[in-house]
Length: 209
Image (cartoon, rainbow, N blue to C red; front, side):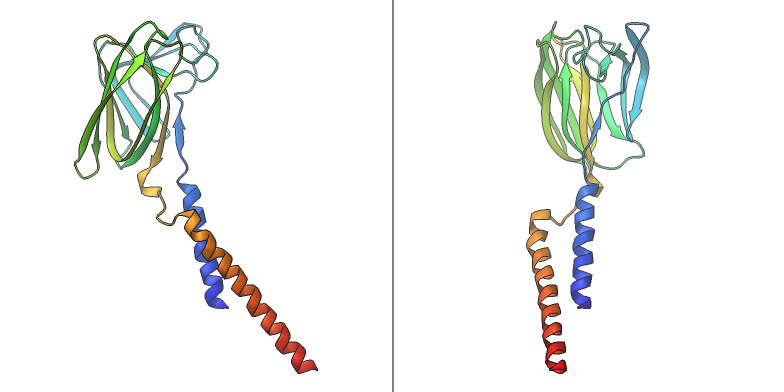
């Protein structure tokens, strides 16, 4: 019986670890004016992550230039063809699921957004995404794991970029016990507990008789 109780506790801990690996979405807050834009500077931090660029700003919430005027304001680059770099504050690896991107004026320009990344342990990678030219954000789906940095630079035709809704998880919090694999074991443990209880009841009844 003690062994089954310990098993149930271990499974419960596994389920808790799974929920701890939930994704975080970085939204860059809101800016309500009175000016049309707000100058941020060379760095911005949120949810334990830092974004650096030669110049960052965000549009007023609801501005016609904001790629998503009905939701939170994204971040934008103020100098053309400059690199924005994303890292965790204090270091450490992270998983990058996706990021929403558009040109600076919500559909006025279209061109490549080039990106590079460095992985924990020294591996690197790169890619390119055609951004802009639409009246709203396009989602760049990355699904990159175990990164220590991610950087993107708009090409000459794109020039500037605004970005929002960066979806990340802490690489150190991902559980190694998948939930579907744990469920049959969890059910078997419960069934065993019920069987043992039934046997005890039969023994007690036999003694009384």
